[in-house]
Image (cartoon, rainbow, N blue to C red):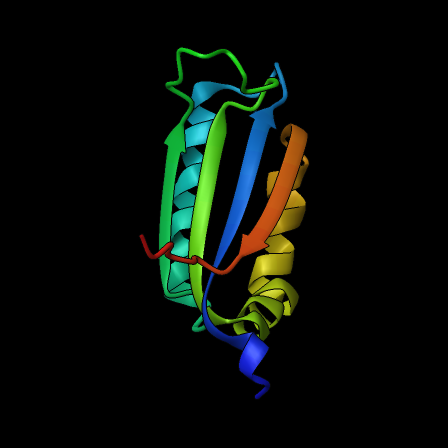
Length: 110
């Protein structure tokens, strides 16, 4: 594995659900997303939350989902996994807007 591909990678998804999606459906989708960590081996951790910022810079995004992987290859394996593909199709169908960023956490030495 190339050195650049090693190390923790965070997969972050910002979401704005469609107006007609009920709170119950959103809760069901979040539980389904969280359960992927039990079904897809490369996915090591999952966290989510709702926007609580007072700055009003969310551009309509209301929810954030963060998954942790051990490498860029692990993210690729997750994205291609049949369970993810099936879930993503259902999940994305409930969204009005989505933004996905993968990044490698980096510390700053002061």
